[in-house]
Image (cartoon, rainbow, N blue to C red):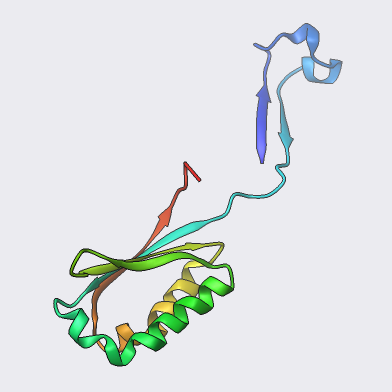
Length: 125
């Protein structure tokens, strides 16, 4: 919602009579609230490439399901020899991401040593 405050310092002569007496707040509803984004960051065990194979298909299927639902925009490992991964979620709650993490086969198998969910503010789409 966009709000504009008008006070006595504004050009009072141009304001309606009811506003001239004091202070008012005008609000304009926006078409829609901006989407809420989150980053999920994983830190992997040092030998992730050797250990992930039995869990990879289910890990990728869970990520694909979130992507198909429009909740996951991007996801993937980083580093030439991957030492972590990054997921960017949109229009999802923190609880939904926590549930995603709890169900992730990589988490259950101990392949992720640390993870964090962070709000992400998009400034350049």
